[in-house]
Amino acid sequence: MSNVTRLRHVLPMSQDINKALFDLDSAIIKAIDAAKAAGLPQGLIVAELHGHAHAQTYIMVT
Image (cartoon, rainbow, N blue to C red; front, side):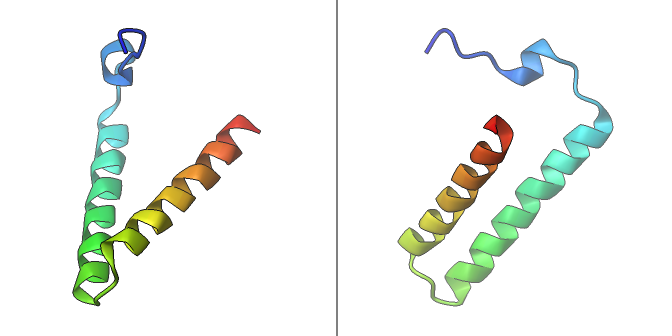
């Protein structure tokens, strides 16, 4: 995995981008906690997140 580059080390990220990333991460954590509290199985939560990741990857490469 030595050919993997972290974006943070290559490109400076603005405070706005860092805040947006932090807000996104916080929202995802809150949504996961709410889903767990509602009784959704962890596998279903993971599958949902994985599906969205695939969809966003498809959008980026097409």
